[in-house]
Image: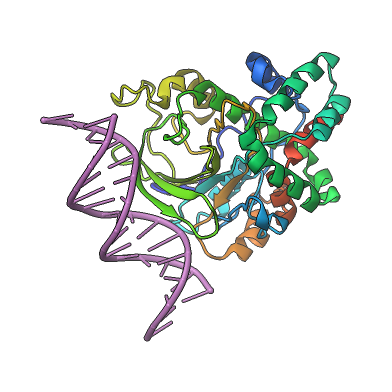
Length: 362
DNA sequence: ATTCTTTGACCTTGC
DNA sequence: CGCAAGGTCAAAGAA
């Protein structure tokens, strides 16, 4: 934390401390009731996590390559934040490092089993079940089916059970964040109509698009329009317009624009800023940061809770970062995911969802 | 007229 | 050193 490099400081984990606890989430979910009814509250007790930072962006392959994600590709959001924290200390060595967060909201599909699971596990107020069913219905949405089914199935398979256990706590965190984000997303969702990247409250200008080899989706490149802000982000969208991955690079050196950005009358996304931002702003405060990503995935599902954040270290030495850095950084690192691999899987997967209940249990 | 998106070309980076 | 892929630039077009 200390070494904050001016321009490129390590990603600061923002919200961690002040982050609303699961319980808080619950409230959120309540607010969102309709869409997110199912989202179960998460165990309140989660420790601050520190997490592993993944230097490289790893792609989350939707269907085919799901089996073995590259190590460390996905980490929980918590990780990110943690990473950020730890980063500050450890990663500092590399001044130019640009931090990047990767957000991969996958199309989320919740299988019935999962739902039922949640229902059972969840403290569940029985009342929730109905909503869930509705959710299922939503989930059934064609778009998701396409993308989600594959994902889900593969994910479940690929994810080791033990990993889940490890991740349980983390997952809670993750879930929380995801939920938050989702919520934000939800709030802002309408704004993001296909074209726009999810708004995180900042103004972005698209400066490029490319078809990346590993993924079937085109990757769009955005820059923060703020004058001196170096932040960039890469967004991959699925056919549906859902975001497959978001990678933030750098850190905003300014606060979010509170008002509707630019004049774009189109109502750009920002409408939501107000509310959502406040939430974040508290946490983020002036910092701003990238940490947040919103996923709005579609309104259709309204649920995409799952997302993975990565902190991408600019450095190529992943191994070092992963192994050492991670731990080293925080020292404690609880991180998570220390188990890089597992984390990845977990994050990708539905772990979050499944874990939620677990969290409650605990 | 202004701003933003699109898109092909060019540059950079990693293997 | 060469190649491939990723990332950025900038002109052109659209809103």
